[in-house]
Every structure is written in structure tokens, then in C-alpha cells.
Length: 385
Image (cartoon, rainbow, N blue to C red; front, side, top):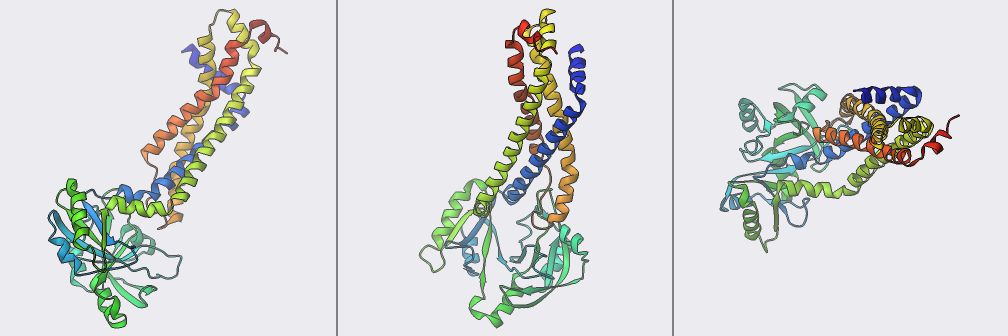
């Protein structure tokens, strides 16, 4: 207990220096939390992937479509439970700055394949009853203040024209990691218009969502589906939903690596700052350490004294940074909108921040403690004055 009191008093002896170091530490941990949250947000789709879902797309590229007739053939593959399909629509709402994912979906059990999106049964029935119906996520509804029954118009870019929809449902995420900024409408509504203006593009879908009966059989089912369409004019590539999502992330891998590197550089900088602070403190207190040695206090006591002060400063800054991360992340989330829809601090990030703060405190004390136990009493006393 006496040692703890001494450590606390030592921390407050140079109040301005300690306050500035704690402030720097807090800013560094805050930056680390936010940068790690950006990386986690990048991988949000991967973490939300279901183990029993496969994605079947054109083997050449996702931009090339697949025939709608593939659905019935995939349904006949042993181990397949359900098959739905989707098509990227794109389009513009108000202007290019108001981006959110817009997709045409088909298969009456599409939402049964995605139980992580909670949609009231009556709204699901209304969606499949009305040809121009649409469903949007909770965050979209709140952002644009839409209400059930509102008419929503999108301007097509991939599919030209003005597309009018009627909002009939709002889905919410079963967990915080579910994207609530997506916009769905019926594929047959899209296809009947495409059939009139671009007949060659009708009857085609972007990808199939395949639910397997047993996730253990995913690899076997994937091979069976791809073998079914081998040597056809539209060969398929079937992979787990997680692998499919990772494929998107891999396209921006350089950005993710850069963000991670910056987050660790920030930690390295604050380690140098805290080590410098502790080195200055230790040098100033050499006569005190010599006096303690003369009174019979051993090296362990000196190490505990120096390390305790360093860890105290690091933890005060680290905890302050972690506490500030929540309101700052909330502000970021509001401004990022649909760009990074899943933006919240994970407990893994907090655990890493806590460990890093503790580690920085111990590392910053290593050199001053080593010098304190190595210096002779006479040499240390010569530092007085």
C-alpha cells in the first residue's frame, strides 16, 4: 500500500509533464481504437456471413450474369435446401452522394435465407404481393425519414429510366454487425422492364444464394454445382459466403494494410514519448534512488517504483482514450452514413487497447529501471544539484 501511495505521488510531482504525457497517450489510444474500428467495419460483411450459405456467380466475373434457369438445376443438387437470387441495381437517389446498396432480389424465401435480417411477417407478405414493393433497413428509414407507404424513386444508371417503388417493410439487424442500410426490391419488377427496353439482358440474375442442409457439406455441394454448369456458356464459381465477402475485401487490401500500419505507428510514437518522459524523470531522481539504496531498499523496489509510475501514466491515458472512443465513434458513424454502416467499438479493440497501454507502460520503464539499478550510489549522488 505504501508503495502504491509513493507511485501515485511520484506521478503527480511533475504535474504538467505527466498531464501532457497522459493527454498524448489518450490521443494515441483513441486513434488506435478508431483505426481498428475502421478495419473491423471493412470486414463487417465477412463476420456476418452465415456458414450454411453459398454464393454462386459467373466464373469469369461477378459483372457477368447467370441464366435464371440455373435456379431449378441448383435446387436439384443433393444437399441444397433453398436457392434465392439477387441482382445489383445501382441507381441514384437524389444525387450521387446519397449512396446505399440497392438490389433486386428473387425467390420467395429470400428473407428465410437471411434470418439475421428481421422483417415482420406481414411486411414480408406485402413485399411478395406487390410488384413495385421495396424494403429498406432501419438506418435508411431514419436517415431519409421514410414511412411505410412512401413512394421512392431511383434514377437508373445500369438500368436506365426512372424507377418508382413503394415502401412496404423495414428490416432490422438481429445483431449490431448486420448492415441496416440496404434497399431491396423485386427482381421480376426489374426484369419485366428490362424485357421491354433491353430484351437481351432479361431472364438473367447476378448471383444465387444457396442454403445447404449441412454446412459440413459446403465444399462438396459447391463442387457439385460448378460441375453441373461446366463447359456451358456461363460457367459458375460457387464459394462460401465468407469467401465471397473476403474477395471484395481483398480488392481493397492495400487500404486495410495502410490503416493497420498507421495504427501501430501511432502506438510506436507514443511509446517513444512515454519512454522519454520516464528517462527524464529517472535522471532527475537518481539521488533519490541512491538514498533508497543506502537505506537498504533493493533493486526490486526501485524497479517497482519506476515501472509503477510508468504504467500509471500509460493506463490513465489509455483508459481516457478508450472512454473517449465511444462518443467519437458515434459522431464518426453519423457522418459516415452508409459508407461504413457497421461502425462501433468492439470489445476486442478495447482489450487490445488495454493490453497495449499496459505494454507501453512496462516497456517505457525498462531502460530507466535498468539504469537505476546499475548506477552506483556515489555516482548517483553526484547528480544532486
